[in-house]
Image (cartoon, rainbow, N blue to C red; front, side):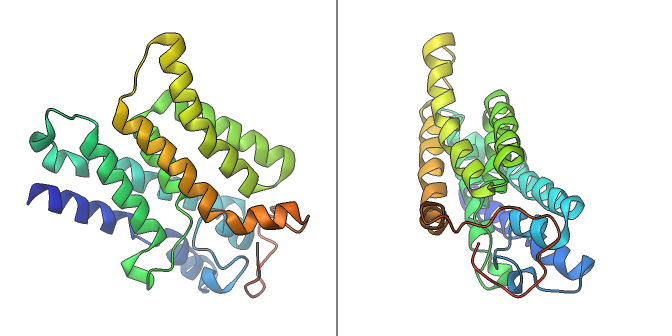
Length: 216
């Protein structure tokens, strides 16, 4: 029962539609009808501007952080022999809730922000380094999709590198989770990959794209 409650609450936490609510509060719009049609921080940056986009990103990350650091404690005693397993499961459910939120007809974002919050709770130093890398790539290229994919791939690589060089093993659960998340991010960005190869991927333009939904 504790496990079921933990996973359900984590999913519901992830299902909080931050970008959708922010769009309605700030512009009186459904953000999914504008820009890329995605209910995530990147589209919030495009449609609502930098201030609200960063706020959406921060709140999406908080969902992942809370799932790992708070909600997972409900059933942690039952997993005492596997200390990282329940936090990983709780974080996974939060990401699932963000991507397929019950609150908005299962139309959510791509889960990158919430996944970043989960990883920040599980491996803070590595995740902070990757967040700096993500920001640098966005600033240099203005391709959020490229930054997100590179960041996602970097997490398991840095975790493995840390284990080899510093003998600091994050554990099988966290390493496996980071690999699965990297693959999931690549899958969710398959459309972006196609547009990048075709030279048609849109660059980030803050707060300028308030027109009806189009591919990006």
